[in-house]
Length: 609
Image 1 (cartoon, rainbow, N blue to C red):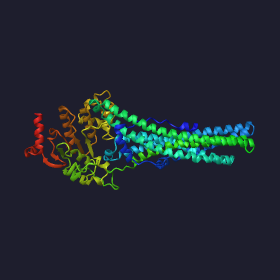
Image 2: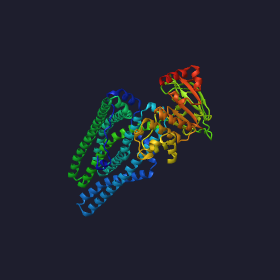
Image 3: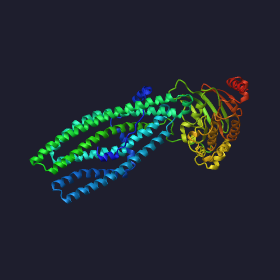
Image 4: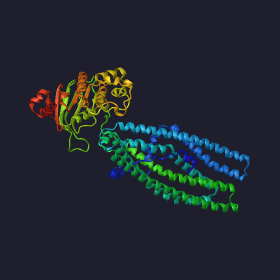
């Protein structure tokens, strides 16, 4: 590899992978993934390159200029030697060297700039696309694996676009140009050089195919390992609470060792390929040089011509060797691009139709479930909703109660159109959600889930997450209504105080009240409360219930609650069991009936007593 090549290469970071405990998962994942047998998947990068034509053209121009100057330097060296080292020929050689330096610097700048720009565009495109995928997609692929593709696989492509592609193109052009000049200088010696090429190409492609396979395996293992690492770090409190740190360390340690073994196999294969290619090339060059010295001594070739031929041969040999090394990187990048492209080709099952039906304006807040049946993907024999029907009038507060697994939260997920029903119809203001734009549907709803789902940043950032254009006055009003203003203003920087990852510096009850403030600032006509007060103590629950009573006025509200005391004032209580409605009415009516609700109420209120 030349010094020019070395200036553009980047060192590969060690990539951890899964260990023996993941072996079966890794094998299945690797078998399920399509394998790139050649470099064609890299053609999918072209649309990203085509967006920046000027940089691509300039990179190509200076690439040709740099390569031409390199080849020209061999001719200048011949002139210097054949003309007795005269001053003017030294000046010609110096001018060619300066042109080479300038073209190389400009090539490096534009190639690197183009690579950084393409990778930035690709990273944004993948992230934007993933955000639009539906919940069913993430039942099949872990968040850790998605992050692996966003980081490691795109980093591999960054190396390709920013350096390896330039190295490959430059060496390919150098090889063609060198062979052309070699034919001019000495056709006979050139034929000897060309005879070496088939001998070099055989190990290049045979071993290169094995490098690609090992590279894909290492990437698959790394993705699986990152999935486990992401889960364990995300649930760090649980890991520590159960004293499973050492088990997690051992599991990930095995993953790291597995990655090292996979990477070492790939490195061995590449080292063997490099050894074979360069040994064969330079042995051939030595043989050709021996012939050339006989031609010079016989007077059929000048010393300058032999020097130029030698330089050109070295350039050609170095180009072949560099292409051999880069080919492994190209195949590795091809596997990475195939994994990235799998994300980009994924299509959400939940998407806006070609001509979405607009929701009526102004919104009424009417909700209807009509004989809905739904089972989560992969669980067709266990429907979460089975013939579920419910109509909620505008401005009505309806509580969904029932045992765990009755389908309460599933109903909210269908209403938010995270999923579509397998049968039946879900509508808002008379519009079937499958005919509407999901973004417009969700824009009319505000959710407070059992898990507060907060983000790093300040309290103000989290409240504004509900409505981006909310100012500080709106945010404080929402915090006040959620009984959160007091503890937020007590923070050192008030609403601007950073709360840490997932706002873990706050207590559970404080996080829940902050989530309620985020929902209130949204001013949505439909309010969805999924165990919204589950993390509050009795006093805070009473205060938030008062705030929610105000927030519910003029809004349609669906409340999910296991603690029946929180839904006593609902306009209607709907009792669910096994995915369907079994009772509905007000608290007093349902208690008198003596059904499922009466049994749940008796158990809870007797326990409370």
